[in-house]
Length: 202
Image (cartoon, rainbow, N blue to C red):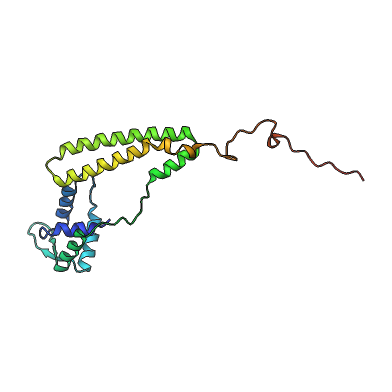
């Protein structure tokens, strides 16, 4: 996740110190993203200073430790501009545990798939209700609203996919010959006791 670029974007508004950057990031991105670990943030800032994108200076304070301020360099300004204006390309594919669960449930049979779909559907409906409540409480912040709208759209898409899973995956839930747990008739050779080979008389 290119958090270092987000930090550069914050610094386009002027020099700042670590905790101020943390607060501004969390305020700008909103509850849908989550908090920013301060230790991780300082690691990012160290890297940006090392790479020449940010400078670091100390400001003396009379009644507390010196404050470290970070300022964007021309190289950092160019880096964030190139990042922010170029198209995003998905690099991690579409790996999602949802599909692994659909695979596992369909392998167990129609009943298991139905149970999973019912549980997952309820989870998505609960998520949509929570996201809608958040959306109503952040109407004054355009960026947070956009992030929440994206989350709602993704959740609705996943809900539609799950709701159609039972029908679409029906061929995978049919019993397969030789599958574990199959019923074997009592008169089938596999259920008959094995006979010991008859000894030959000499």
